[in-house]
Image (cartoon, rainbow, N blue to C red; front, side, top):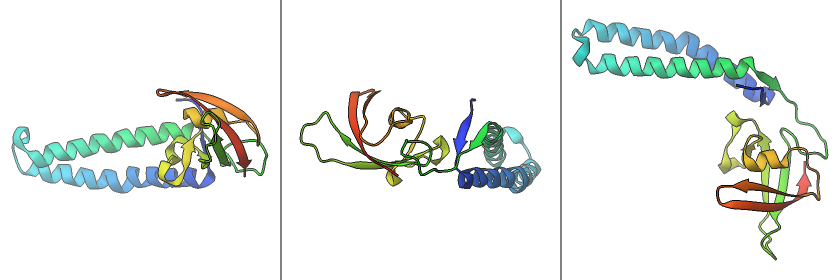
Length: 156
């Protein structure tokens, strides 16, 4: 896993989640496993199997969070004219003639992505294409549906 960019708030949120999983959630699952073992035959014990699956999911999440936070770089939003992390960018398609369909996106790390809120990852095709561009720049990027062409109207 390479370097991962995060806002300070997201880094702190993930650190809290990791701490909660390591302490509270591991203990809860250990108690569930102990109770399920006390019920007897483990081969036909649904509670035991469920607790083991929860344990595996929690350990996988802990491992993922540790790797992300180990390679994390905290990026502060800047008031630059160039698109970067935390930039709010308004774009408009240029391929469709007369299209007034403007969209505004905020560039974030992959863990913060939320299309309903207009937050796109800098790893996404659009996010990667926007990085380093300025107001007025035209750019294109490739998706499974083909090439998209946009113009940057505003960078905040």
